[in-house]
Length: 317
Image (tube, rainbow, N blue to C red; front, top):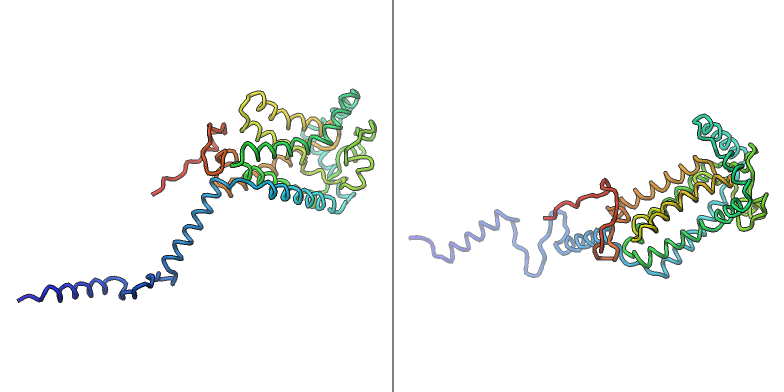
């Protein structure tokens, strides 16, 4: 005769247990993983990682008081570090002479000709002096405010680009002191001194509180190109997008006409900005302008970016 059903079932249960974990957990005690962690802990860790991933894909709405404090403290630190760099006059002049000779060898050493040509038109060079002294700050702050109000989902990533760019520039100021053309004594005109323009820390009374040898890389180019790209990719009206692209181009003309920078300083600023964009790409997994316009949402219209920038998300299982 066969065994009773109850005995046969109990035997099957014991065999199943033996093939499984080898023991039956006590009631109310969560089963343990081989590494000693519980399912509850595993679930908490997975939830945290998921939340971090979502924050990267769709950053939270920025808080005004935090952003104001962050920008204020960051600019204070930037100014402090920039001006605390030892002013190594001999090295700065040597580097300026090297860059000037290198540009002439390449056939692009036109800074002095542009400087003298624009300086001959008084109203134009005076306007450029004020442009150099003011718009660098006004437009950068204006674009930050615009991004905060109109593109809060992209603001954090765009701000990260700007901050990383500026941090790398500080490294350049320290390790590669460079005299601007107006100080190297090669026939360049210091347009601020000649025309008695106010507002610039590059010449005159402001020169005593500002590092005169922090020309490489050019943050006038780094910041203006950051502004221009943000406007170009995110503005809706075509004429505004065109103005966005014209702004860094005009800034390049200004920094050369006023003899505050070489061409190579502008290249250095663009390289710093490129590193800033790639850093933000690593943090947020997409380019800054591809994030949703609103936190947690989807773009209300396609963002015009180069097709090479598009990265397809892997299918979720």
